[in-house]
Length: 273
Picture 1 (cartoon, rainbow, N blue to C red):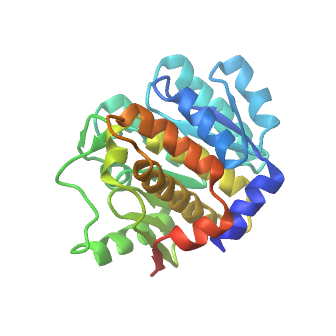
Picture 2 (picture 1 turned 90 degrees about the horizontal axis):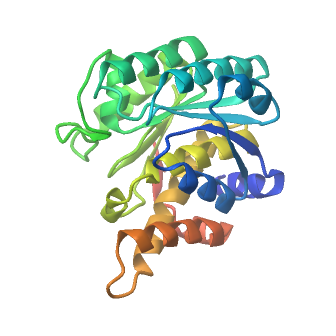
C-alpha cells in the first residue's frame, strides 16, 4: 500500500501550492520535487486564489506569520476547499505565541484541513486549546513514548474524529491516524532534529502524496512519513567524516529523490493499530 502511494505521486506529478515559512521555503520546494511532485509558492493575497486553483493541494505552514500571509492562507484555503482540493495545516509553533495559536485554531475551524501535521506539543495545543512549545520544537514534557503509546494513539484517533482530518504527529515515534486506525512509524534518526525544516519538507511531501492518493489519505500520509524518516536514515548512513547537518540536509533530499518502491518496502518500519 505504501509503495502504491509512492508510485501514484511519480505517475501523476501533482502540483502543490505552498504558503510556507521563509526559513525553509527552498528546502520544501526541493523536497517536493525530489518525491516526484511539483511545488509552487505564493503568499500574496491577490495571487493565491488563482495559484491554488491550478494546483491539486495546498500546504499551509504558519512558521513565519505576518498579516499578509495570514490573509493569503484564508483566501487560498477557502478557494481550495471550494474546489475539493487537499489542504494540509502545519501549525508550526502553535502554543508559543497567541498569534500562532489563534491563527492555527482559526484555520482548523474555518478551513477544515484534510490533514493536520505537527509535533505533539503543537497538536495538543490545537486539540486542547492551549499548550506549550519550546520555540517551534516540542516541549520536553511532551513526547510519544512506548510507555504512553496506547494513550497517544487514542488521543490522535479522537482528535481525527473531532476534526475529520488525518492527524500526523511526528517525533521519535510518529503517529498517523484517522478515527479508525493509526500507523505507528519508527523510521528516522535523532540527527534530523539538528536540521531546520525536515518537518516543513514532510508537510510538503505529505500534501503531494495525499493529492495523488485521495482515495486513502491516511495511507498516503503514512507513506510520506515513512519516506521522510527512511531518507533521514539513509542520509545519515551516507555521511562521511567531518560532514555535518548541512550535508545531511542535502543527503536527505537526495535519498528522497533516489528512493524506489523496493527500498521503501524493505526500510519502512511501521505497524497498524
